Image (cartoon, rainbow, N blue to C red; front, side, top):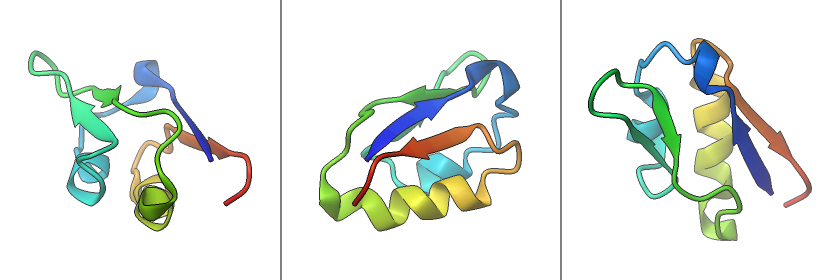
Length: 66
Protein backbone atom coordinates (compact mmCIF):
# COMPACT_ATOMS: atom_id res chain seq x y z
CA UNK A 1 0.00 0.00 0.00
CA UNK A 2 1.18 3.48 -0.90
CA UNK A 3 -0.45 6.60 0.48
CA UNK A 4 -0.51 10.08 -0.93
CA UNK A 5 -2.28 13.14 0.41
CA UNK A 6 -3.32 16.43 -1.14
CA UNK A 7 -2.33 18.92 1.53
CA UNK A 8 -3.87 21.79 -0.45
CA UNK A 9 -7.36 20.30 -0.07
CA UNK A 10 -7.04 19.20 3.59
CA UNK A 11 -9.58 20.88 5.88
CA UNK A 12 -7.75 19.86 9.09
CA UNK A 13 -10.54 17.74 10.55
CA UNK A 14 -8.00 15.33 12.08
CA UNK A 15 -10.03 12.18 11.52
CA UNK A 16 -7.00 10.53 9.89
CA UNK A 17 -4.85 11.22 12.95
CA UNK A 18 -7.51 9.75 15.22
CA UNK A 19 -7.70 6.62 13.05
CA UNK A 20 -3.96 6.02 12.56
CA UNK A 21 -1.63 8.29 14.53
CA UNK A 22 1.28 6.08 13.50
CA UNK A 23 0.79 7.16 9.88
CA UNK A 24 -0.78 10.65 9.99
CA UNK A 25 -0.17 13.80 11.97
CA UNK A 26 -1.25 17.42 11.69
CA UNK A 27 0.80 20.59 11.37
CA UNK A 28 0.61 22.62 14.56
CA UNK A 29 0.07 25.93 12.81
CA UNK A 30 -2.94 25.06 10.64
CA UNK A 31 -3.96 21.44 11.27
CA UNK A 32 -3.16 20.28 7.75
CA UNK A 33 -2.36 16.59 7.44
CA UNK A 34 1.25 15.43 7.59
CA UNK A 35 1.98 12.01 6.14
CA UNK A 36 4.43 10.26 8.47
CA UNK A 37 4.68 6.97 6.58
CA UNK A 38 3.73 6.69 2.88
CA UNK A 39 4.19 2.92 2.90
CA UNK A 40 2.90 1.73 6.26
CA UNK A 41 3.25 -1.79 7.61
CA UNK A 42 0.42 -4.20 6.81
CA UNK A 43 -0.85 -4.06 10.38
CA UNK A 44 -2.03 -0.47 9.70
CA UNK A 45 -3.72 -1.05 6.32
CA UNK A 46 -7.28 -1.52 7.60
CA UNK A 47 -7.07 1.63 9.72
CA UNK A 48 -5.53 3.58 6.83
CA UNK A 49 -8.45 2.53 4.59
CA UNK A 50 -10.83 3.68 7.30
CA UNK A 51 -9.01 7.02 7.54
CA UNK A 52 -9.33 7.49 3.77
CA UNK A 53 -13.02 6.58 3.88
CA UNK A 54 -13.87 9.04 6.66
CA UNK A 55 -11.75 11.96 5.45
CA UNK A 56 -14.31 14.75 4.86
CA UNK A 57 -12.18 16.35 2.12
CA UNK A 58 -11.17 13.04 0.48
CA UNK A 59 -7.49 14.02 0.37
CA UNK A 60 -6.08 10.57 1.14
CA UNK A 61 -5.34 8.46 -1.93
CA UNK A 62 -4.35 4.80 -1.70
CA UNK A 63 -2.62 2.69 -4.33
CA UNK A 64 -1.13 -0.76 -4.51
CA UNK A 65 -2.37 -3.96 -3.02
CA UNK A 66 -2.61 -5.30 0.52
